[in-house]
Length: 108
Image 1 (cartoon, rainbow, N blue to C red):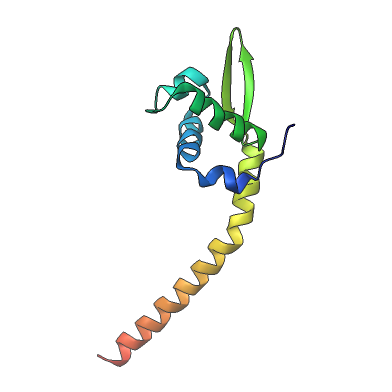
Image 2 (cartoon, rainbow, N blue to C red):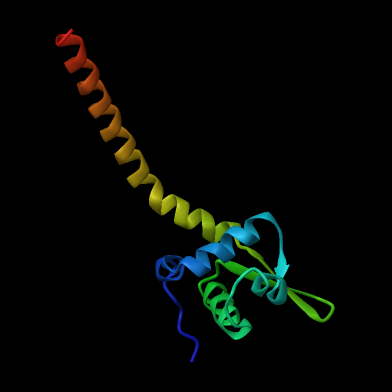
C-alpha cells in the first residue's frame, strides 16, 4: 500500500534534510548519497523512498543507475507555505527594532 507521506514529516528528519542539501547542488545516485552518511545503505534507501513518496525528489534512470534530484515544484510549495510566517516575523522584528531605537533615542 503506497501511503502519501506528509512533506513536513519528511523534512523533520535531519538525515532527509541533509540529503536534500546534497541534492541541491547536483543529481546523485543512491550509492553516492549513501557514501556521505555513516548509516547502512538500506537506511539511506528508506530515506530516499520517503522523500520520493512525498515528491520532494524525482528519480531518473541513466543506464543501470537511478539518479535522484530535487523536485523544484514541491520545494516551492514548502517555501510558499513558510513565506507568510517569515513575513510575520520580519514585521515583528522590524517593529521591535523601531521600538528599541526610539527607546535609545529617548534615553540619551
